[in-house]
Image (cartoon, helix red, strand yellow):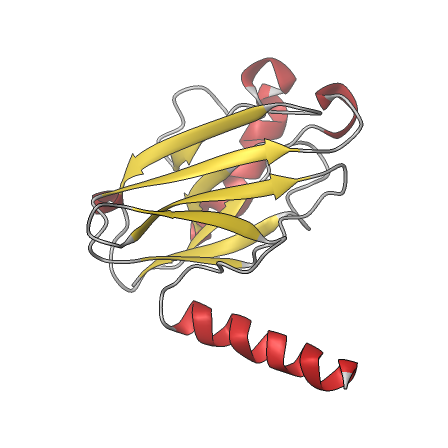
Length: 165
């Protein structure tokens, strides 16, 4: 029975992502609806592990602005397990990560003025929250975008895809 429920839960998650409902399953993320009923805000809950629990965010085309909020519920301070959220076009991923590493913690591992960075949050740790809002007009149709944490050592495993639906 449990095995069937797991398969059902996975199928439900896939169905939700395909229809642009942006992963409204418990323990993964919380979403908010705008006045028209569109999901235009997502809250990603983070802990001390270097991973985003949501592998893909699909933004409905009706959203003119989208907000990503982070909530760090881990036990360690940001100096030990801090995370940020950075949005880039997928082809720019490696270059942005390299430049962010050079910029260091003082710049939240994001090179100041880097035009390849479309949106980003500061680094957060235990008990902290951050959010960033961006115009969805920056997301071209049929282009794959990646979100990631550019904190040193996290970008290879702490990333996901973002698309406009």
